[in-house]
Length: 590
Image (tube, rainbow, N blue to C red; front, side, top):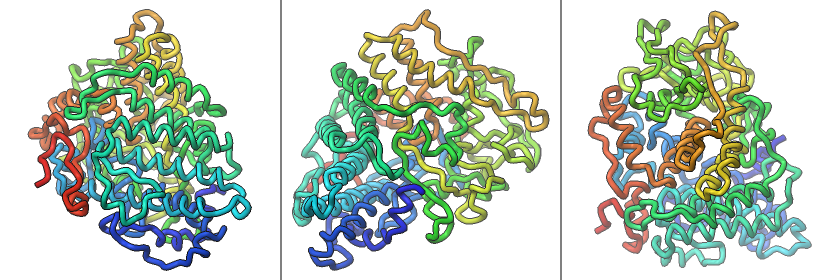
């Protein structure tokens, strides 16, 4: 049984009420009144730790529905980038998401404020656990040092999310009295200082953690090392504090990234990409750090499923009968095209759109320009009309989109079990299962290492080997077959490995950034990658130009310099009584 589910079954709801947050996250008092003796009891400490772990799924006691503030970052990291459309029932359905997609962001956007609030609520849970652990003796809590280290990894995760979303955020730890939170400014530390502190805390935690934990779901030394490598990778790109332009790359930090990843042991790629969406393999060799979910576990509705993806199961008459948010963009589909050697076409935007859909009726569509070769991961990631959808036997994928006139005909295929699978819950919440959400998987580490090696510039061959390992797994995965003739592939799949010839630093950098997009598509990371590399504005400007004839709402979309990060929510500014400052690129608070 997953550790995460054991935690919640112990009565985590009681612990959740201990959080010191409400609509203004720094202001309220705890909802329950417990004596110090009870708080410091072994049982209570366990509950507080459980509550902190439970926070990974995004639920707080004060704000429900993590679908609007998703831990998967599908809206913040993909819809805000060039990989996905908002989807749903039209532009006004979940308009705050539409504002993210079209870069019409204002500081009163509810989903931005909600994300800020939730992350600080979850940090509050960690601090409740740490205060109790710090006050306990090792006699009462024999695993005290390990549990403290676990909590510090969770805190690092939540703070890292805040920094890469909002840039300027207030920092405090469990030692600061709650009444003093109001005195902490959001510009006390720079982005670089935040990232340095987060990485240091992760490395400190790694020293106290075991290589493995007996209970699946608990963080271990490898998780801390892998996460520290990811944080240092971000830290290595030095940004101008006003424009957020990348001005230099710190090679010494990149060397630390490589060293940390080399210390992570005991993981490997799954042998088939599509196993990433099978529950049987969710805690397998590729899973480094994951949010543990479950179904039919005795809790309400379907169980402790991934509510962050509640809105996103295919709609439009699909067997999922979902809300149909989070749809892959045509630009993402085009990016999977390959050349005669099976390598990515870097200038794919100069080509006609690949496999455009002609709608005949609700059950019949045709594809035009489907002859070019494509990376097989396209049909592992995207649900395309006329193409076999997982192992669904009744029909090929149709136009499973609610508003085809606005968003086209393609839906997401990642993160869903097949509709006929016994692992899928029958009914609401639509399409849900107990499939874990991977925060860090082994393929990420191979690509992070490749990125660092490329920027260091001293071992380009090592970088090529890492990227080719990821591509070779895709190459050897079982390709999607034609629905009507399973002896044939569903498309002209061709994927090759990068040769040594022509593997310069500039070419390798393009290869790495493309590979990161193709391998990690729809995993909530794309926009953060673009900002880290310093190419968000140029990438999104090209994207809007390429897509505006298909998606008319992009006609007026534009990326203003300084918009790399979200605005500081006005609700939080008001709470701070004017202490917080706004991020560059947005109107200053008055």
